[in-house]
Image 1 (cartoon, rainbow, N blue to C red):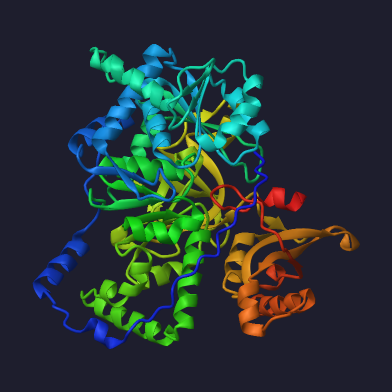
Image 2: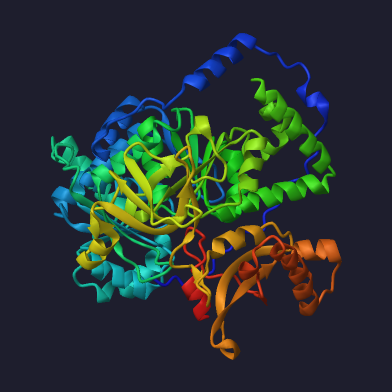
Length: 614
């Protein structure tokens, strides 16, 4: 799937950190009995209490009843207004109203329905209505061009499209090319039925009227845990998109898999930044908090991250490495500008020492950093790609639990996760309780392809039996990822097999390893490492770094009015320092300066093949 879109993290800035000194830890009341009990519990802790959900409908019924008056979704429907709170009760009524109307009045039971739009309350109710009995949900990337949206509607054989107001122009453009679509349903619209067009609010109202007249048919629909319920097209970073078929059991097992590793509470609030059409956000960022009675605050967009954090005070944030790295760099830049880098480092050492004896005062000492993140953040979860362990350790050092997860669309998505009671920064986590992971044909370092056998594993690829048989052999899914497992059973991902650079002498080089090292160079904003054919040397591959410079940092360190040649030389000198840490065959031999943004998926992974075509 081609996504001709350039994803860019906005250049937000944190206010200068004015952190005071040792007085921040004065008057600390130490409850030694409590500390002793916590340490004993930690030593005996294996996993938290397990759950055994079979379907998402089971979770929906339980949570929307048990937590009916609690807040569920927080959203700014008016961009200049305040966040509005929607309770579990309101959510339940809208989902059941929508489901009743779609199945009975509009005759869409067991049909395929495309859902496309930004993260919004109406996306959540549309997806949940599908999972609870309407038919097959087809979440589609809102950033796709019109022709690709049209193609996916046809490939999925969808007979209805639920779309946000921002996608109205695109839908209008392709509507006449989709005669098989019975209804085009616009989110947050009260439009009456006009041809094939209707507002989602109108549909919900029609369903609620049926319910008031005694129609309970929707909630009486039995869900087969094994039934094909969600069709998700992969982002296709290395090849043409495949349709992944997901069932209720896959999704419910994700909830069962996370609960033993991470203790979540109804008081927790998730901050929704990542796109909901990805299983990472729609499962772990939506279905999981719903299962435990937590709330979800919807970020208005990347440029609104900082103000929205302060407005909604979340406790948990799902992120991708690029976002975590950006937060890390921006916070530390503000610390340096305030002349507090030495103090912060000292306080990290002091608080780490105190924590080692059971006294945790990090939230008090680093309160100013916390306030910039909303004041209550306790979890940051990074997934979708490897991250520099140094960054994860820093997050832990300031007192925020840093967790990493691993999985793919094909595992819906969780296959491994860091247990919060035994965090290992740098690892992608331990296999979750419903999964097995093994390394296929490991080399002398123990590295090989990661194979997964899991209850979260997809039913197969949509209308592609050949690809399914190639990917799943004897029940084991061949992930295409390269990694190893340590003596404690923690998984480490070192690269993608399809990204591997194979040199003339048969050496394998995984570019992700080098990219993480280049990420430590202040003058580099983003980079991609690849093997460039050298026609003068019989097409031998030259290890090449394609780099977007951090011009702001370069200007700060070297002054203004620096030309392109000088920028190239500055970065090349830093790369030479990295090369000294690499074995000779991995050393970067060529540098390309890139001025525009990389082509990326909506989870901010560089689309290498698209990038190299440019």
